Length: 421
Image (tube, rainbow, N blue to C red; front, side, top):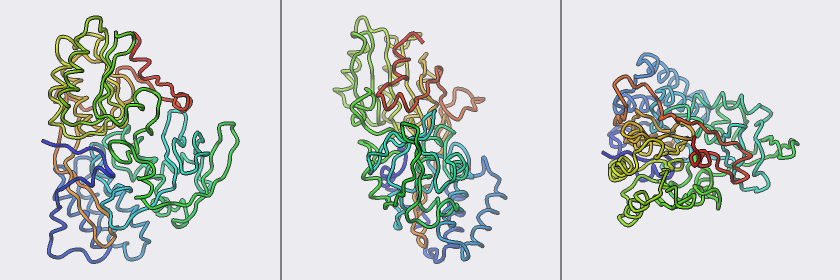
């Protein structure tokens, strides 16, 4: 059983061709594309109407198809996004993702990278480096809180943590802002920033094609991953973001830190190193960091769950797992299995991936509009019991990252995990 990672560049690796793409009578109008979207979600998704009624879903599809000839292309995009997101939680894999390289008609992004910290939405990377550390407060004079309120109903999600990671990405999509009426067209738009000294400045930004954006803001493993902070020399977890699995000791050898950044078969040499370290004399804590892990193949982590569930590690207070909004897909599966099988203490934010989720997507190209939609075809669950209704693995110790801590290269999550909690 294989579950894919998040989206964007990693979705280009999906090799399954949707039945929709092979149908003899392909859609020929935008209205046909809308109807095809509804049909394919209904046919492919294992439980499309778990969170939305069939009647409401079909009514939304029919209404958008009827309006398609009279509305703009970007209003059509917003309508499609709204229909897909109406599937509700547990559906972070099912979506029309703006930066997806499978689109035959690219979307466009304003060239900044945003992250939603507990104290606001800040620029963490940008084509204009002077914008880094600035807080985004408005777009075309609309307060950012109001813009987010318009964008969030369009974003696919497993849960609210997943939504928090992805919403800034959709907010930067020029076509989305135009379709919502926030911006006029997909040309230059006015973004208002608050600088570190408290002064506000209006900046005209011109959007760039998605391929250029995702290349400029690429992450080492997953391509561009909206929920992940950019690679940096510090703190520790960001400095090791290019390595799928690695380990080192901290605190004078009393702590073993394992950075687990991609769910793939552990290299035997790395696995042996981890085994040797965690069984070392004097080791009081084993910290497994999943905060940058967007997923992969959930059939490959058995050796790790066995190791972390062993008597050498699975002791009260010894095993600590760091999680966050980017812990998604197969990584969330792993976190949920560790949660139900060990005495681990979880630190950080709720996982972006669900305890239950729909994954293993089929790509469906809508040929008239040139956008590709990925539709989940399989249900995955790692619940503790039949009555487990959680949408995420929740932290036992919740630690939120502030912008001040991030820009100072401070890691409050690891700092807390190193302490007695």
